[in-house]
Amino acid sequence: MPIQKFTVSRDDTVYESWPDVVLTEGGKLICVFTECAHHLDRSKSRLCTVESTDRGRTWSEKRYLTGQGTKTHYFNCARISKAGGGLAIVCDFVSGEKGPEHDAVTYVWRADAEGTSWGEPAVYPFNGIVPDKLLELSNGRLLISNHRRSEVTGKLEQHLHYSDDGGAVWSDEITVAADPSLNLCEASIIECGGGMLVAFLRENSILGYDVKKVISHDFGSTWGPVCGTPLDSGHRPTAGFLRDGRVMITYRYIPRGTQNFFAAFLRADQLEKENRRDQAVRIMPLDYDRNPSPDLGYSGWAQFPDGEIYVVNYIKDDADLAYIRGYSFMPGDVVLPETASTTKRVFRE
Image (cartoon, rainbow, N blue to C red):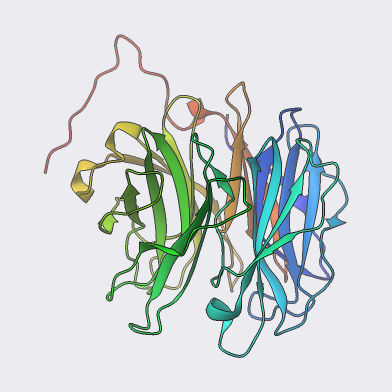
């Protein structure tokens, strides 16, 4: 069956962008995204949520989590996840004169497991923008990661803070990824077992560089060198494990000026490989923005118990202003299950 597409939210009076989605234990999809004037004008920026109880085929009216900001003081990019027995939304709030990466703070809203009621947010002085999801690890540790520009090198760097007591006390800042020749940002961190974490990162020099990755073997306390992946020209990776054990990453494909939307499928047993050529990947196009000035590729996704994958993305396409689109497909739409007669090919240079 081909990929099915659905409208999650469309309001032709406002720019809707940067969505994420979570699947609750009760089977409901909750999508969070940002309203604003434009990608380059965050006037009236505020966070919205919509919900679906029919697997993303239809969606509720928007529910506002925040009031509207201004061009210089605004909510930026939210992520939603399961944590602490409930749900959590993380978002950076940008203000000040030094620049967004330095003056942003991090807001965290908590809700029950079905997202029926969101409490007042906790505010943390974590300087940086575009945080990853609030990640709860198998040992109970909480992570919040974001990025900002180094005042020494002028390059973007990824950092994190962790808490081992449910968020009451947070660690000092830890550098996840920094390189004086690279702009490393917008990490998506996954837990792989045995204390191993992998952070996939956007390289933001706009030169078509690969998605980068770094690896931790101690639940995020320290991180290894910056490595390559076979995902060329990738921005804003959103990674996670599928039920069959593969890793899926949705991302903006932007080699130079153009923008498309892809999904990549990686083998879990190769996540620790540091050499690009040792990492197999299958890449599936998810969407193409026909707009003369395309804008898409910040995304989120969830998987239902029966295997169906649901992705949310923002796109302009046939509209003047961006809106939120959903995509549904099954793992078998990507690659058929192996059978006894399957011919396995080994590719060599």
